[in-house]
Image 1 (cartoon, helix red, strand yellow):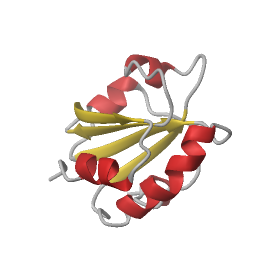
Image 2 (cartoon, rainbow, N blue to C red):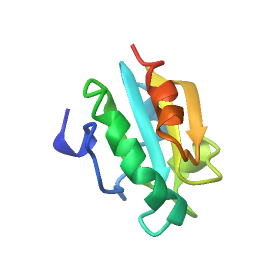
Image 3 (cartoon, one colour):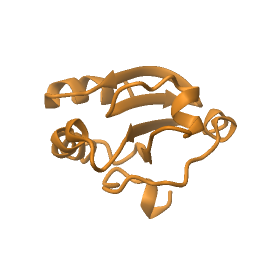
Length: 112
């Protein structure tokens, strides 16, 4: 796992994998779609980071989303932040605009 894809990933990456690459990933992965200027994302960040520290086994891919970003469109992301739990490249569940840590905890507990 690279340092930019761990449970403590704090920056939104402009470089996104393709849908095909994500679909081929093995194991449990959290995709986080958002933008650094998004007020909902800013509010959720401390909660997301706190909960992810409890799940160091999860690969966390934090993606800068927006107009013209194909991965967000492939996952039909409309609001930020959106957290998507994948298992072996398939969506297990998602959480949109979390405001409480227990919401994020519930999502992450579905990982192996």
